[in-house]
Image (cartoon, rainbow, N blue to C red; front, top):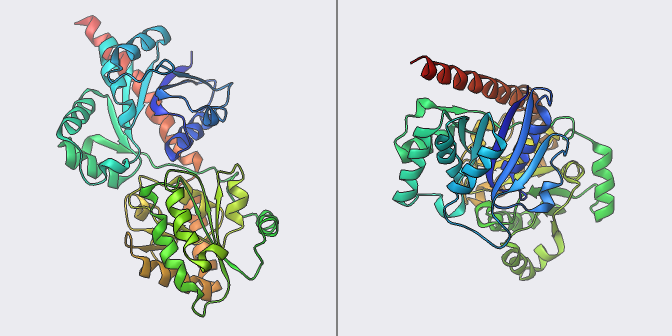
Length: 386
């Protein structure tokens, strides 16, 4: 009988955590694992359709138009009906599932941290910290997607860092790989010439991604460094602000494209000459992994899990958060030195394939999931014997 895993998270909208979950579900053997995705707030149908219907059931416990503050009772009812072997909650939005899982007492419990929201980059209210610590204590396994995030939550909550496991995200290297012909087709379609230096970003247009720093940095490229274009792929609440910045500068208006959401991310990445990740904080960025797997030289902020992916000067370049001058210097260097771009991209490909492939990630989750039910059954047997 396959191990039934119930994944609990806030929503199935567009995001790195959701994309990582889909990759795990696609990668695990369906003969050995059965999946249920349970969202606590809203489903976001535009993403749910990407979940393989033959691999996972997708549901939402919050009735339409209702957003309860306390969801443990609903989660308890759901777990009693579905009888999962493992409950895997993700981030703050899924944390109550650990309380519900402990209540029913028949499932192994995992809680994982995948990043920070914009309101809690620097600190959290003490009540939230206390509840998070309680969740960690009640879970059978606590994990995070980066060593930085592991240390941060251990420090905030006082929970022993040694008890938090790290499983890095992985990228689908079959889907994301160098495909020059696809890149040329996209450039032709978008009117980007072969001679133009194409800088790219992919991600939600939110404050935490800090795209204004990129806009400020690229302004300097027009000063004697040839033709360039900036392509930003994604949507979000910061779009009006970015549009305002672009509209106020004729040079940016001519060279910057806000492409919106796209289902052709692999092709768009291949159209770029360099990838920039300017985030204020990251767990482990899926978009950064995808760019490196696509053979792009990357420039990313020294924050969160980015230094765990990018070896500065070897498989990419790093710069301090909000340092537009340092970013501009890196971009000018890469624009002027094609040989440096090639060297960085080759090392990036090697690093992704050896350390951050989807196969490596799936094997790690496989070991985790297979160990926990055995531990839970052994625990139950000891209780019966006693």
